[in-house]
Length: 606
Image (cartoon, rainbow, N blue to C red; front, side, top):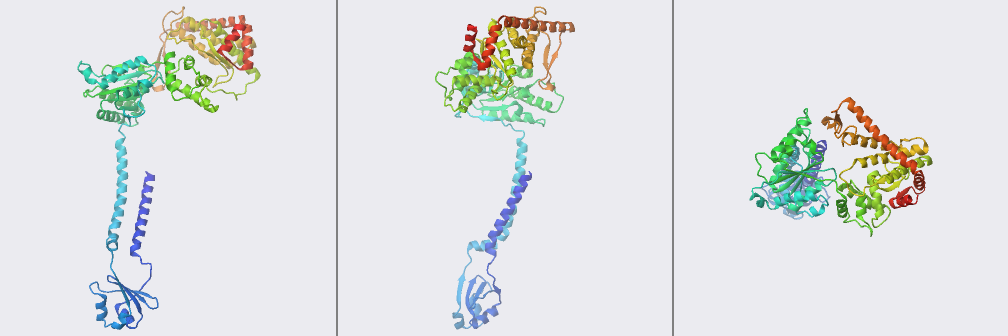
C-alpha cells in the first residue's frame, strides 16, 4: 500500500510539471519589452524613431530604430490606423513604419483563454481517479478473497492427456471409462434410469498417477477440467473456504458437463467432530459446503467430482456414502509389466542407446511408483549429459535406480582401510546368507562405495512381484538382515555401529511377524495393539494396547526368540562358508563393486 501511494504522488508531480511546462510555451514571453502608453508611441512615430509595429489583437509590439523593444495596448474595437489618425500622426512619418498584423490561431486562443482554467481541473480529476481506482482495486481484492482460484483446462488444449498417456492401472481405466461414457453420451444412461455418478475417489500411494488419471478422464471425455488442491480452500478466516467451494461449483455449472478435481481431499475431508475451534471450524464448514454441493437440493447438475487421497481411512463417512463419492478407484503400485509400460511412456522423448532393455530396469525397480520411474529416467538422462554422452545407456539407468533408492555415490568420502575392510565383510555376510537361503531374494549387486547415508549396500531384488509373503520368507529375511552383524563379530571379534540400521529393520520385522501377521506359534493367529493417529499431533501414532502386561512380556520374548534364531541361522552359514565369505570380501576390497553375474560366477567357483 505504501509503495502505491508513493507511486501515485510521483505520477502526479510529473504530470503537473509536464503541463506547467506546456502552458509556459503560451504564457511566457522570452523577450523583455518596455511598457509605454499610446501617447509615447505617437511621439516616437512623429520623431521617426519607430522601425516597425506588430499588431496582435489589441496588443502592439513596437521596435525602435536602435533595437529597443516596447509594447502597449489599444482598444479592442479600434483599429491601429484609426487610433493614429485620431492622434494626428503625420501620414509621411507613418509610411516609414513597417506595420505587421497577425491573427491569433484557434489553438492559441483556446490555450491562452480556457486552458488555465480547464487543465487544473483535469489534473485534480486525474489524481482523484487514480485514488479511486486504487481503492476499488483493494475492494475488489477483498471481494475476490472468497473466490475460488481453481485452474481450468479446456479440452482443446494441445497438451491434452488421454488414457494412452497413462500406463498401467488397467482396472482403474475400466472403471473410469464408464465415467467418460457418461460425460460423452449421458442420454443413453438416463433413458435406462441410471443416474450419473456424483463423485469418484482415487485412492493410492503417493506417485501412482492419481492426478494424471483425472486429467486423462477429462481429456477422453472432451470436457472442461477444474483442478484445485484441498488446502487451497482453507484459510485463517472462517467462512472463506465455504465461499470458495460455492464459487468453484458456480463456475463449474456454467461449464457443465465438466470435471472438478480436488487433490489431497483429506486436507478438508477429515472426520468432523474432532476440532476444538479456530481453523478446525473453518475446515468443517468447508467440508459441509462440499457435501451440500455434491448432493444437496440442487442435484441435477452434470458435474462429476474426482478427488484424490492416500488416506481414505481418515475421511468423513458422509463423503464416502453413495450419492457423493459413489466409487472408490484404487491405483496401486505398478507390477513389473506395468512398470515397463510406464518406462516406455517416459522414454518417448529420450534417446536410448541401442540394445537398452527397459524390462531389466523394470525388474530392478519393485515397489517403485510411476513418479519414481519417471525420476529414474530423468536421472539417467542427467548422468548421460554429465558424462558428455549423446544417448542414455543401460548402465546410466542402473546407476539412476541406485541413486533414487539410496542417494548419490560419495566417492569423495574418505574411508580408512580398517573401515573399508569392515564394510567389505559386512556386505559379504549379507550377500552370502542371501545366496544360501532358499526363500531370500537373489543378490543383484554388492558395493562398498558409500551412497547417501549407507557405507555400503547389498541390492537384493525378487524374481517376481509378490502380493503375499510367507513366514519362511520373513525368517530368511531376518537372517539376511542380521548377517552383516554376525560377519563383523565373527571376523573382528567385535561389532560396530554399521549394523544399527539392520538391527532396527530386523526388530521391526520381528514385531510385525508377531503382532500384525499372527505368525507366532506361541501367541497364536491374532493381532496385538491398535494404531491410531493423533489428529492434533501431526503424524504421531499412538498404540492402544488390547492385551495384558503378561502378554506384552510374551510378545517381547517371542520377538527376541525370532531374532536369536535368525542370528544362529546366519552364524551357521557364515561359519560353514567361511572361505566363500573371505573370497567375496577380498574381491570387494579390490573391485569395490560386484554385479549379479560376477557374484554368481564367484559363488560357482568358490
